[in-house]
Length: 164
Length: 289
Image 1: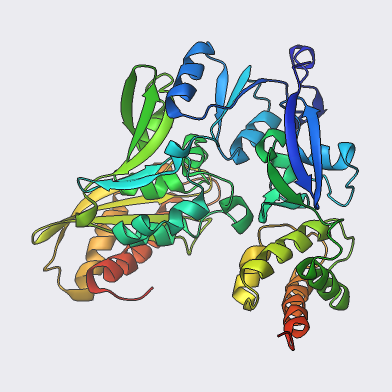
Image 2: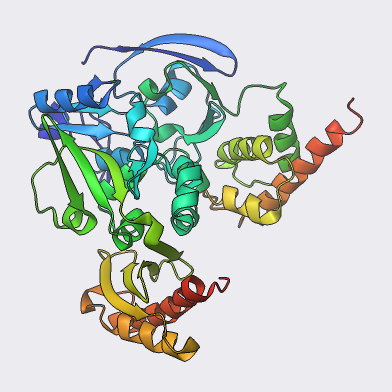
């Protein structure tokens, strides 16, 4: 086995220092080393997006990202950051609008939604569709997912009304 | 057996595990080139890595990976002597939004901003898109139309290549792709129409030269190497009917190679003629898309 590389990363607000072989994927670090099983392994080649996480706020396929690429960076995945208002709004939106069936793509969709709403808090349908088309859903036909994202944006706006 | 011995076990018939490799993470272009020279032949470069991962899953087994993400020189944009130089390490998102790209060739910025998906655009690079040599990747189409030169760095030398030369693989390993150079940008108008993807997409560049322009149209599709035709455009072209005739004449010259089992060459030429007419109208008459 090749010598391990030292990788330091922050996952959902917690710092980790790991020694991993160079060919270790971020997906494997998250699932196997750090037990973040909400991140799903699917196509393993960056196409489907079920493994989407946010690296420094940017949606990224963790199956196609080596651990060395996130050295010194921040990673957010779906089973963390319970107090993040944007992720919380996304989760509630998907719940209210039934934006899932089997649920396998949902983690990735939620992280895409979180990144979108941080960048564009009031996205129109076209922008939502553009972002959501990054990831594949085999179950829903996407309509409920699009509605869920729109609802999440509404929830976020409602939560901000009345703030000083 | 060789795959298993190298740690790249077969996970599924079309999906191999990621093999072990030596990792290098240079911080300068010169350092990267030196490492590549020292790694006697079986090293690969890693920029965004979106296509490299696919290659590894398809069975590529490099001895070493040279990661380029720490090299700032690969992500610069400059305009020098009317040549737009775009760093090969720029992501699609960053490159298409760069103010200098938008000012210099607005049609390139617009077309570049549409390719791939939002998620991939944040990671994949223009250099990786070109060097992957996959027909369905689109930057070859845009940049071939713009007569782009690709600048490579090897130890002690630089060289350039055109996009068709990359597809033809007419030279042995050229080294590290550092930048894409688009010449004569002040004379260029550019349009990219991907409304008929995956049947075909069309990139059209007009280079002005007084009363005339040189048109360079390139079409690409899901399965075929990009093909181009060049033609002259007299600015007294005779209105919309003149543009139609020009577009049809240009499209008729695309070779039969543009056909595939999915779509015939004849159909692609017909669609190309329609799109080219619209593009010529947009570029010559300022008509909206």
